[in-house]
Length: 182
Image 1 (cartoon, one colour):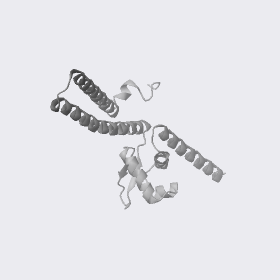
Image 2 (cartoon, rainbow, N blue to C red):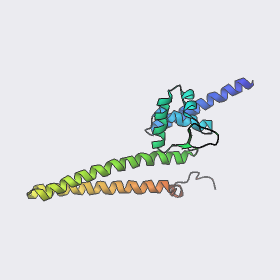
Image 3 (tube, one colour):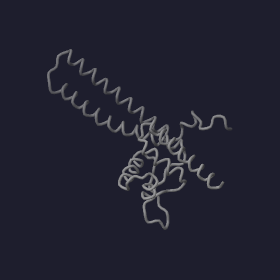
Image 4 (cartoon, rainbow, N blue to C red):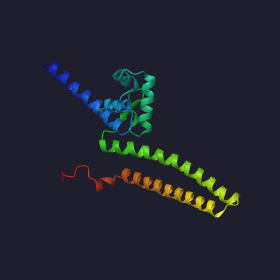
């Protein structure tokens, strides 16, 4: 009976891991990253690349890439444990913090790409305005494009403030984690 119960518990853990992977996929993260996040989460303590490779059947090299992706997304971190010589990796145990880390990481990447794009276009347009004699229509088009760039800059500044709103925890003052608990 105990074996059947432990087998059933293991089946539930596997289903939980697959649901985490599925949820992560719906947030735009690969199911592999989601599965590894679920494995570490359900393990309840940090794991080595060897342990993760064994659980997933993936090579240690591939597992290293997946864990690196997770660290880039701020949903995993390397941790130290006395007496353990291999690198250990832990994931956030708070679903809300994982959500925030995941989305703010992606938003930061979008902002970074956008800043380069907007600076390049803004510079090109300003050179056109200064270096060439332009007629009224071209001047109006340049101004319209510059105005669009300034709107773009404002939009990404707003995303930056949104990131800060989430990361500061202020979001939970407006959208509580547990609205029915007092």
